[in-house]
Structure formats: structure tokens, C-alpha cells
Length: 346
Image (cartoon, rainbow, N blue to C red; front, top):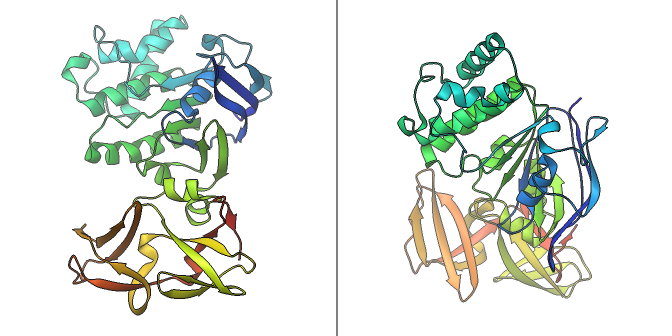
């Protein structure tokens, strides 16, 4: 059982507190994504689990074995870095075999394991090439194969697809999930966003300023964010935020529209995602500033000072800059937030 148990991990760099008592449980064979902006602490946490950084406090266990006192090489984990870390002076075969040779495996076992994982990541015809002869996607597969060859109980990944172009990232995303599922590996992957996490993850742990603010399934985090930070970070384009004032108990006015909400708050913030808005004869008012045809939909944007309001309309919508629109939100998709940015349930 390759469960990962992280308890009260803290880490500071001088006066900067990078991690503030992180606790997290990752189930056997689960694919968990640590998601957050640069500097939130996700890579630091990953490196602490790997043994590349030492925590100031806390414990880490894999299965029933505590590992935070072990050296990195003795933890039974593998890590795939953002920059691939493929050795240019070695062939694909020798790159994949590197960890096996460090474990002093026999040549027969090295040959068998290298060819097994090379076939798994579609590199079996490239084993004699050097990294300079490979594309970015192929080098990424080499790094992944090298990690898989040692049969790790846990795979740690730090933005492994971020250096790939959009089409290759889409291809590798599907392959990555399939490979890790077949290898029955528990995976913890640090990401800064981009949308891949919604399709890859079994759960997402959203980090902000050294703490985990929400950990749940991708759909739950997307539909029911616990605060405005999560709501604005998850999704592309992100959720709209509209100030709303209570005009009678439980009735709020926002952008010329009256909506029912949680009573007892003089002021709330209404949150609604761009795809949950449809044109109507009445609704939230929007003066179109920018029109962006995106194929399946047309994104319209209004900018008023620092406030940006977006709606994803059907591609058949005939809208132009300067048009006045009224947009009706799907009432069951509206979310409410208090003055501190915390979600308020209706």
C-alpha cells in the first residue's frame, strides 16, 4: 500500500515561512495534483517528500513506514522534474537504465526493464539515440521511463508538461494518465495551472501562501470553491465576481439584476462562471468591450477599471464591441462570498 501521509510539515527559508503546518493524505494509486501559483510552497513540499529538502517540523510516511529520516535514495520514490534532467551524453537506453544501474541490477534485468518501460512510453525504436536527437516530448518520455523503470511506490512530478507546446501537452497528458494507471503508482504532481489538472487528477489540493486551502475532486473544487482565491484560480477563463447589496432580506441587487441569496448580509460578492451565463432580455448588465471567437464559443469581455466580467456565449452569437447585453446566470451555479472572500452557503 503506497499511501502517503504528510503531517504538520513546516518549512522556513530565513524569515520567509514557505510551509505552515501542511497535512495531507494521499490514497494508494491516487493521482493528486498540488495546485497553486509560483511561491505558494507546492514545489517545496514535493522536494521535502522526495528528500531533497529537510522540513523544520512534521512527519512523512509511505504506507506504514516513516521516511522523513531517510536519505532520498532510500525512500523508494521517483521524481520527474520540469526540465527533464535527461543526460545528454547517454543514449535513451542508458538514460532509462540509470536508476537500475545505481541499484546494481543485473544486466539481464536492466535489459528487460528498459525494454518494458520503453515500450510503455513508445520509445522502443529510439533506444540508441542521444537526447540531442529527440523532441521535447520524447525527452519527457525518457524522464518518465527512467522513473518508472525502478518501479517506485510513489511518483513525484514537478510541472512535467509545462515546457511542451499545446498539442504535445494534450497528447502527453492522456499518455501520462494511462501509463501511471497501468503501473499502479501513487502520484503527487505539482502544477501552476493551465487546465491539465482537471483531467489528470483524482483530487486537487489548492495551495496558497504555504497552506492547503481546499482539497477535493476537480469538479467539486471547480463548482464549489471555498473562497474567492480558489474560485479565481481554477478555471480558464476564471469565475466572475460581482458586488451585490442586500435590498431586502435575502434579495440582492447586482448589475441591474435582483437575485435571491443568503439573508443577513448587507453586502456579498456574487460568483458565476462565464459558461453559466446566457443572453436574456434582463439579467446582469454587460457592456461588451472585446469579442474573441474561440471556435465552440465566443468570449465577450467587459473591463471597468480593475473589474473584468466575461461571458462564454454560443459561437453563433452576433455580438460586437459596444453592445449592451443582459446575461442570465444559471441560478444553481451561482456562488456567494462574504467580505473576507469565504464561501457563504444559501
